[in-house]
Image: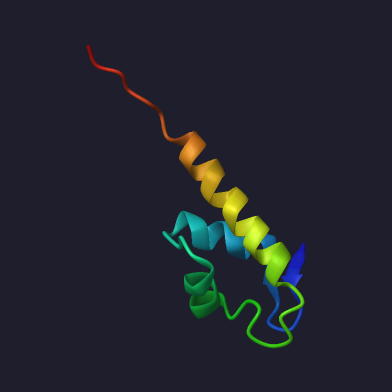
Amino acid sequence: MYICLCNAVTDHDIRRAAADGVRSFAELQARTGCSDCCGCCEAEARTTLTKAIEQLTLDIPLFVTA
């Protein structure tokens, strides 16, 4: 799904950016151009990035040593 129509940034692009290490909205903007034009997509882009980062964090296996 397109998140930023102005710069053709999709939810997949945002998830990929998160997987590649993007951890802030400013980094996302620099890397993808998302929300650099009209700004209408900012809320959705931020939400998508946050969820992507949370998902990555949850996917990391936890090892407990005694």
